[in-house]
Every structure is written in structure tokens, then in C-alpha cells.
Length: 308
Image (cartoon, rainbow, N blue to C red):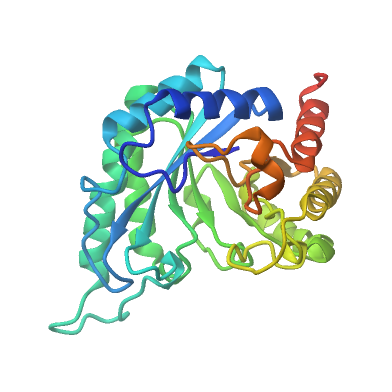
């Protein structure tokens, strides 16, 4: 399960955040967590990522979350993400392929991004994280193969665990540098009716690179209409627990037929969790207190050979 995303400075490292993580483990049976947080660049065309500034959680908060996860018996993937402060989705971060004087450049952006990722790669190493995710859904950057390969090489100088990149949905076959990573991972927000076709496509990539595969993100909001477009968190619709639960049943059933799907970091579980009695009013991705909670717990228990 992915934990903590959208958390801002001051919302981690407190009793409520600790209770949230404990509830995640207790109710879902997760044995891994992706601890996810974001640094903000001003726009999609900005070249500075001031990860040390608010609202990004502090280094101490990140280390606290890793310690809490370890105390709960979880394996940890540290997942630093970059977002745009103006609300533009990170997939649109983009610059000219050829440098132009007086225009923002890929070289400047990657220099700042490299500093951000290497900072947290060092923390991942110091705290014993088993995995590091070096990027998330940055579609326009995917074509910059040389820069990504250089960054991976730098990461491996300071971090000895598993290294992956979370490509966006539908982009698995567009990344050409999977061979430099330890595993392939992507965002599994596929329509409930389209899993077979998408898994066939992804399987070709997995076979080509002969790497383990996980869905670094996957999930569906608990609202009417979301099963057909689970990546759209802005979709208007009423709270609908059954639709979310059915999506998970379909996803787990379809993926269980593919032995190369090695796991999930489901999206998502907030550090500041709503009250369990309010689950019926929540229409977001979190499964806490909803019908999908039991679906996830049963699927994970079956995979781990335990009982719930």
C-alpha cells in the first residue's frame, strides 16, 4: 500500500499518522509500503525543485515514517515525487529537445532533479529501505534516456537496494531504459473492462527485458463511474463502495493469471486518515472501512498464505 502521499510538512511524525499506518497494516495485511511524498517546482517549465522548502515533509518526517513502517514489519520503498505548484500534472514537465538560449533546459532541470533524488537515495540507504522509486509518471521525461541512465548510475553509487521507476499507465512499452533498473513498475489505472488487453501488452515488455514487474500504483476511487476511468480522481459521482470493491476483485482476478505480476503498491492511504465511521461518505482511493478493504485483505492473505 502507498502511504502518506499529499501529506504536507507537519502532518507526519505524530500520533494520528502513526495510527494511520498501523490501521493500514492491520486491516489490509500489507507487507510492503511505498512511502510517498512530493516536492514542488513552480510550473511544468521550471528548472528548480526546492525539496527543502514547505510544503514538502522534512527529512526527519521521512525518517520517522520509515522507522514506523519497519516497526510494523513492513518492507519499504521510498518514493520521492515531483509535482507542479500551479496544479499542472507532472507528466507535462517538458523542455525543448535542443537547447535554446534564454529558454529553460533539460540539463538544468535534471541537475536539480538529480540533487533531489540523490538526497533521498542517501536517506533510503541510511535507513535500510529495500527499494527506491526514482520517478513517477513523468511521461515527457521518459524519452530522455541518456539523462535517466546517468541518474540511475549516480543513485547506485549511494544506494544499494532495488531501484525502479514508476512509469505512467499505457507507457510501459515507451520506456527504453528498463534494462538499467532492477524491476519494471507502472501505474495500473486501467478500466475494469480492459485488464486483459493491457496485461497482454505489458507482458510483452516484461518478456523483452526479463525483469520482475509490480504495479507501483493501482486502485480505484469509491465513486460511481470510476471503474471505467480509475485514474480520474476529479470525476464527479456519488460515493459507491461496491464499484470500488468490484474493480479490485476484477484487477486481482485478472492479475492472478499472470505469474509475472509480482505485487502491488495500492493507491493510497493518507497519513491523516478519516474516521472509520465516515468511510461511507468518502469517495477517494483509500479503502479504509470500505467494502474494498476486505477484498484487498483476502487477496493479500491468499498471496501470503495467511488467513484474515
